[in-house]
Image 1 (tube, rainbow, N blue to C red):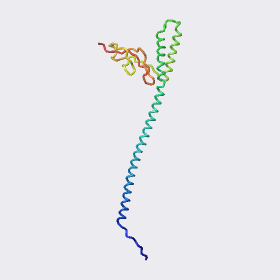
Image 2 (cartoon, rainbow, N blue to C red):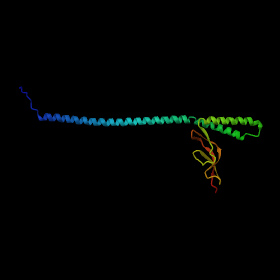
Image 3 (cartoon, rainbow, N blue to C red):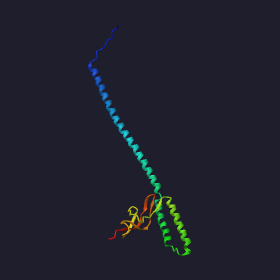
Image 4 (tube, helix red, strand yellow):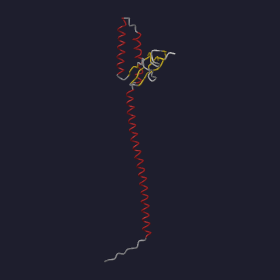
Length: 181
């Protein structure tokens, strides 16, 4: 049998190699921990970015919905005096004068046609007579003592209010009851 010569290994060489490997392992473990923390942070950022995008989409959809719903608000507000004037013309017309009957009928039909047209787009007149006063939908022009109605009840409407798709665009000008003194 042939004899293999082995050189004696010095313990310091093995120790230094093991120590070097342990140091390398510790460095790699520290690097892994740092990278895992960075990855977790990036995951959090990605989750937040996705949530923010969803919120932006939702907000944009709501903004578009509101824009569609209330795009006519300025136009509708400009039409209100026309509706008021047509109503005033009918109220003040001399209905006893037969010669004016066709004109009054024409104005009345025009008013009804216009009211029907604007109602299709969500413009609705408010008639709060005998309803409780609501500062969001009514503007009190005066308060009058009244024993028949509950206090803060709308007694009369001086000018109609209007809402567009549920939003008040002009409050009704009203007279409100108050308890007798």
